[in-house]
Length: 202
Image 1 (cartoon, rainbow, N blue to C red):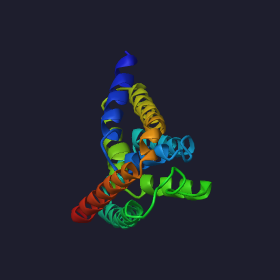
Image 2: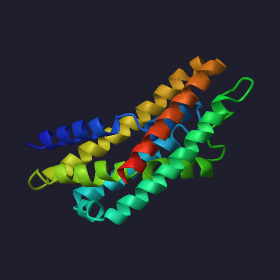
Image 3: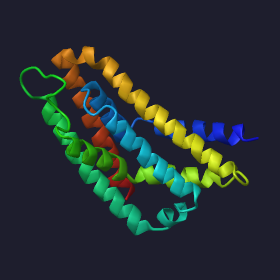
């Protein structure tokens, strides 16, 4: 029955995507700042869709079987996350008040590049989407694997747009500069903890 693989794909994809990480922290923070709150979740969702599709089509073995590729991806992601965490830390200790326009990517090009970096420089995204979801999809016969992939992609779209919307709803809370500092410090901790796990794992 086609509903079962679709539902399992949605549930599995949601379980992997909703976990706290650099990408989710970035999407939420830009939603709070009301900056490119449609473009950013769209890029995240489309990136997931491409990677999940690659996994469903059987390309997961290429990434999983290349320790060199995993190592380079880990170090590249760690460097970027460390830098982004430092930016958030500096932002948290700036004097004066902040508004939604004071932080985050200033131009559309910067927003697109930062979103792609947060998404694609983390090797965990390839392990979750291409390798893990791709492997699980292969357990469904026939068209079931593609339905599983569609379910996982749907979960990604739902989650990232809901996350961005939640950020917009929380924006009034961040009229208080203390709230900005707490969020920026939280982002710093998330980015640096993930960078540390990437370095340790490589």
